[in-house]
Image (tube, rainbow, N blue to C red; front, side, top):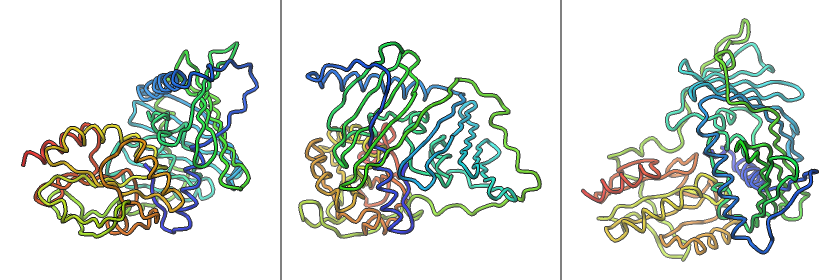
Length: 404
């Protein structure tokens, strides 16, 4: 889940970083054999199979211990070591070590706690997430060091193929001659770059991600994630939280949430007027008597892109019964052409709004949107029927709303 920044400048910088880690160059020294360049369909099929198996393997692990080395040419803190410990999927621990400090985060049924060795006189108790399962990726996101989320996303069960959908121009496969290693390389178009995943194809484990992106005429930005240790076991001690000696507990108030909390089932959605990507006026009044899904998304949001096939299938299945979708893109002005091309390529025939203002899009600000993907399902009566439902849960909610 991707969260907006308070300041527009920071939001734009974070967007660049998030787009950057979607891009990359792999610099391997081992002898490689590549899939035939004249058979891109076979390479794409094999890439999907390989990376899907990796995501499913990690998603299925109840416990594991892993260590990751990160390096970047684009961040103030260029290098870090990340240690991840998961016990029975319910207890998580993440430690981030940099040259000058450590940051530690823990989650268990007792609560969510973090602290840094830079301020060892206190530790923070966070409110528990109000929606969704807490993953190592989300726990890592509480730290100050941000931007490289590929490996952590895979360990949380996300398929990188889905994260890259819509931006990949091509894919190739390279195999090590003397090791059970396969590298899947995606060539991307916006911005120019590639991303390469090296995996152990015998165990279906991620071994490394090497990437490079060239934003315009700027110098290339390189990112590296190397898994230095991984084993499918973890002990109680690995995930046990012990506050720093003599430290004071500091409780922070609950965050404002990922959207305006007035948007709940039974409430009326906020009225708005806008123009779609064809320049035609759009308002909620047009959808009275029908079931409408408002989908806040963006091209750079991997989870958003991953939801599109299921959403498209649901739309095709129920549109004749009065189900409509309104997509609201939070992409910036320089991505509008790419959004239009993506919509056309994937035959997304519902209406779309994209004004190029990103997180400052008036409807997103009106609805208090701070994270995407976000969906609101509005019933025939004009009231909200469900909030943030996706996949199978979305289809069930649509069926229920259409039945009223």
